[in-house]
Length: 515
Ligand SMILES: CCCCC/C=C\C/C=C\CCCCCCCC(=O)SCCNC(=O)CCNC(=O)[C@H](O)C(C)(C)COP(=O)(O)OP(=O)(O)OC[C@H]1O[C@@H](n2cnc3c(N)ncnc32)[C@H](O)[C@@H]1OP(=O)(O)O
Ligand SMILES: NC(=O)C1=CN([C@@H]2O[C@H](COP(=O)(O)OP(=O)(O)OC[C@H]3O[C@@H](n4cnc5c(N)ncnc54)[C@H](OP(=O)(O)O)[C@@H]3O)[C@@H](O)[C@H]2O)C=CC1
Image (cartoon, rainbow, N blue to C red; front, side, top):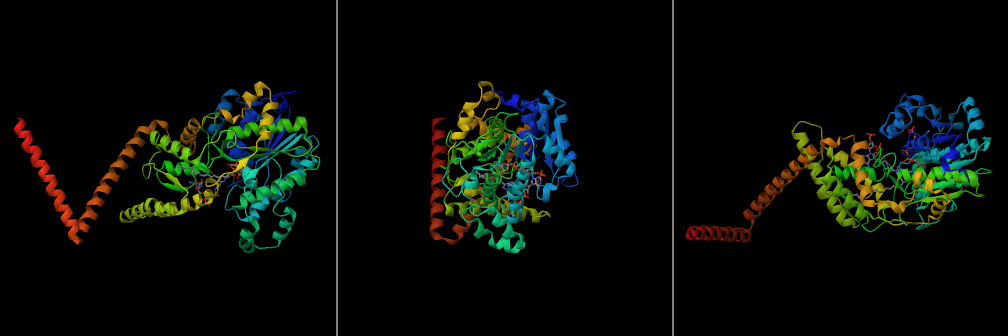
């Protein structure tokens, strides 16, 4: 049987969402580990006045592609950008592009989606469900298609505690919902959204659940694979450890904590933090493409791509290792020294929000106002509170995913493929991974230079001294106010001062005697 890279040799692959976090890593890995692949058709929309060609050009300049550029400088010749806006009828593809794609594509990887938790329902439905439906229609017309791989999320069924590798009945028949929302204006849909999404925490997970159902309904004679990653984090090994390029999921939280802005968050210390490195997800996705095409399973195969059941790690442990890493490798220009604590207690959380977030923000804004600058800290904290409020659903509870298909797939791979397309998360050393993840946010998201760490440490020392001075001044001030108002406080104060004097005179006398 052909190995994974032999299978992709001579094949034409269509990818949606190639400019996104996971899409980029997929493109890079496919070109690096399957160098004989014939062509990658990337469906990309024009954005901010840049054509799909220009966007690809910019993307290929990024650090992610450094290793590939070195190994195979001509890799870009296999990339064919196709202009496509997925929310438009017919995916806004030209007739010529439809013809090319239907004649040549062998494998589809559908990664595009809106992953925003606060996306208006209509738009999330348009992109995550209707666009998926349209892509499946296009796939049905493809003459040589071997496999359609849909990227879902492990949280598509987060209304359940135990999640098997099956497609669950949808909360509502997607077609009916699409038709009913068609005539409603945005304001009505907005009002109805909480009722519609029911048990789901946001429009993202809800529409991803509907998308899975659409994939099943529209699959016809297609060979389908559905990948359900949990919380996708920085790369573990490839193309280099710690690669990450966005603030999504925990990355923004780590950065905010490293900058000393985030000091508290609602999360359960003992809940499993189901992070999964992006390279693991992509290796499994490519292997699933191979398996689906070669074995042609009768019904859609679902792969829960998670770590919790195999190699669990908890939010409390993550907090510890994130703090440790940022104390050793500080971020530049931190607002305060990194010191974040997670808590599941609502009252304790509100207390720390007040004392550690809002109070310092108010003080800093006051300082900015007094020095003639525009206040900004309170605005930053309000956005941070909105973001962590949306994340706490995922960091405060546990889910149990069955990952039998992931294990089955691993057993189907040759020894060599298991190394090249490694998704064995038993080998993941969490403390090492979290360290390289945090350093990755510093290097690749914030573009900070590791050579500037001594200056960042010096800045933290300055912050520590400011804190000591501030605390001392505050203590003396409170004490003075207290003494002025209470006879008892004055008596205690005189007693302590006279005791100190007595000790001082005793030590002075004993030292003169011993001379
Ligand atoms: C230190 C101890 C830590 C211990 C760890 C404890 C808890 C772990 C934390 C999280 C775990 C839960 C993760 C759950 C993932 C669920 C699994 C999935 O399916 S993943 C898909 C996940 N999707 C997301 O993560 C998207 C979430 N984001 C949003 O929905 C929105 O961005 C938003 C948070 C609602 C904010 O929207 P807003 O309109 O206000 O802003 P923008 O998105 O336009 O962004 C503006 C600007 O800010 C940057 N940004 C975005 N998010 C963050 C953030 N969290 N922190 C800092 N900065 C952030 C963004 O990049 C933009 O920058 P720029 O203008 O320069 O482009
Ligand atoms: N990140 C995570 O933690 C997880 C992600 N997933 C799933 O993985 C997949 C990829 O996620 P991720 O890479 O993180 O997401 P990103 O937000 O980084 O990427 C989304 C991609 O979709 C494209 N896209 C969005 N709207 C359109 C449109 N109207 N027309 C054409 N393309 C569009 C974006 O293109 P553009 O650059 O033009 O905006 C981008 O390439 C998604 O299906 C998501 O549900 C699942 C679990 C966890």
